[in-house]
Length: 188
Image (cartoon, rainbow, N blue to C red; front, top):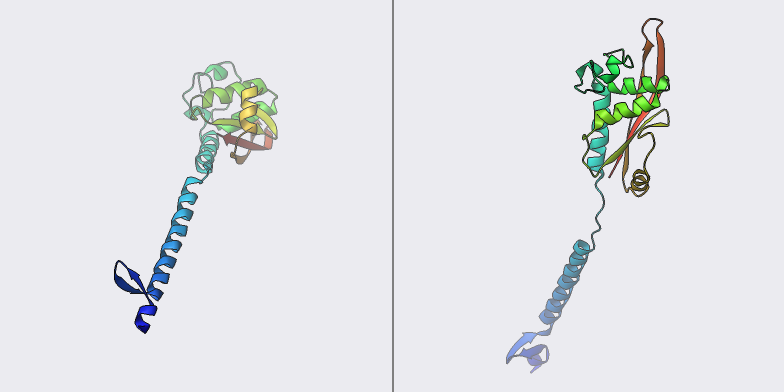
């Protein structure tokens, strides 16, 4: 009789009360964990990835820093290109960033803007936008559109890549330009 008081009858079988309590406790704990995991995965917010913007920003800056005028194949900006033939570019050993900074130093900002535009045409995926700043002066795009400004203001991730640029302005008298801070900003 004492045995029956400590037991529960289910479908005509006797079960101890202690085991029944722990089973209910385990089922309750598993359901709380399952609901927590379900909520964690369904409410996960989509955070923009900064890795691709970082890579693009660094790659674009590396492209401008590591390539020389003589190494480019561009009808506007390379040796025997439009700027070379008009005498606007005179040093084929300048890197692309040095040449943009040289245009900045001699206050040829329109040419610097077009120079960067021609060199970077189709180089970034269409969902990305960039700016080039030299010495805290916007070089490219020279006059940002309203859409450009809106996308920059609404960007969740804005990645800069910075370098210092300097060079020889005139080989004959040894005059130099710089050092200037050059910065590329990339966002999605």
